[in-house]
Image (tube, rainbow, N blue to C red; front, side, top):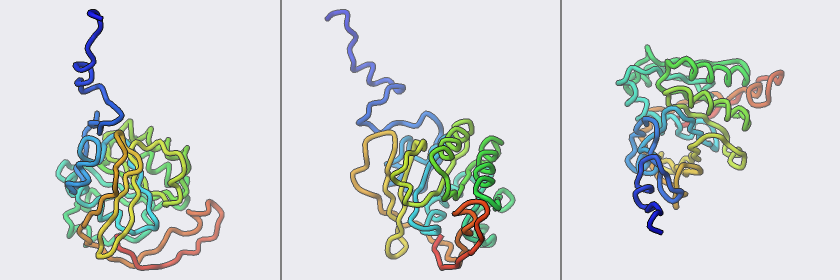
Length: 239
């Protein structure tokens, strides 16, 4: 029909997204520091103003090493980095040696899982952090949605770490990954959810491994909920 509008000009508009295309990010992104990963992420980096969920088969498999280049980048913008309920002790000289400004690094270690969720929400609502990283193994779908809403109202890069067993659960996070430690310190990154077509194969990254620590796992009180006895365990990890 002569009066019909051609689709090609419409599909070329930047505010139109097709399901078979990798979306461009409507908000700024934080470069990951890994060219292959940036090429697979919408907008070319970790999203700001949105939640990134990273599933782990154990704390300390390399999540810090994965995010460290991005944290080093955002340092130049003067943003704060907030870590909520990390399951391992942090060695300040090692972080400083990696170029992280300790004056802008905040660690929050709540006694209970609900307090950890609240702390992460409040940090995002404050508008201060450039990056928020929260280890919340008990978080359910409702908690994930609360964090996504908080992240969407901020300009921070928000990262939530949950166990790999949560893979089958619904998640409001627009970006969802699974992280696995490989031999020789490499990491396998499987993108489970992104705005765009599925990634055919996992990515293999070779991050710098500045930390090797003996850490304390989350106390059972955080994993099993309030009232549970704290029975911390120790094991060697690569962060």
